[in-house]
Amino acid sequence: MLARAETPGCHRKAKREQPLVGPHLAWIHEVLEHEKQEPVKQRHTAKQIFDHLEIERGYTGGYTMVKDAVCTWKDATKQVVVLLSHPPGEAQVDFGFAYVDVTGERQQVALFVMSLPYSDAVLFRPFRKSARRRSSRDTIGRSDSWGVCRRRSATTTARSRW
Image 1 (tube, rainbow, N blue to C red):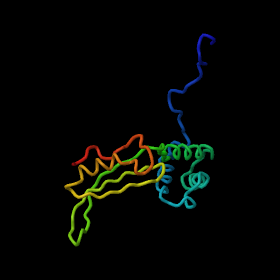
Image 2 (tube, helix red, strand yellow):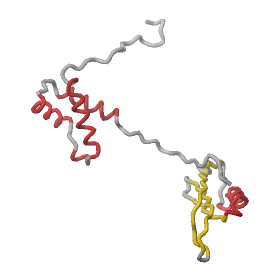
Image 3 (cartoon, rainbow, N blue to C red):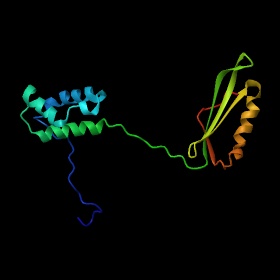
Image 4 (tube, rainbow, N blue to C red):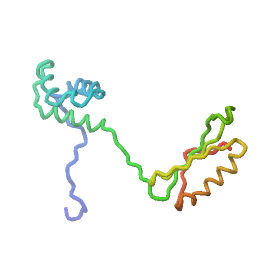
């Protein structure tokens, strides 16, 4: 044992059979899946599911087996939230098009939006089609007008349509 860096341990290769709760797992998962859309207070608890199994389905096993099955299902279907990190000085840039009324005439304009998520500062500029190439490049370089130093810009479009 001293020749190894870790203890050998015991690892189960095959999943352990559940002869009592196994035949009822599909029903338990169906109940839990159906109740996902219900408010939290109206969902069945593991104890209520256990009671239904005993009375309606003839389950003879213990409560812990049902509770473990419910916990395993909830862990497997849990949503994962990934928090975004926006360090100071990073900008997000996006381009788009919109129709606006200019002196009573409907025109399509290009939109340029640059935001600094860390400070919630937003720069929004519409451009006419003829001036959009030169003006948007000038605007990207003019982040000094915000009084900040831009480290990196991330565009959300794969390529611009200029």
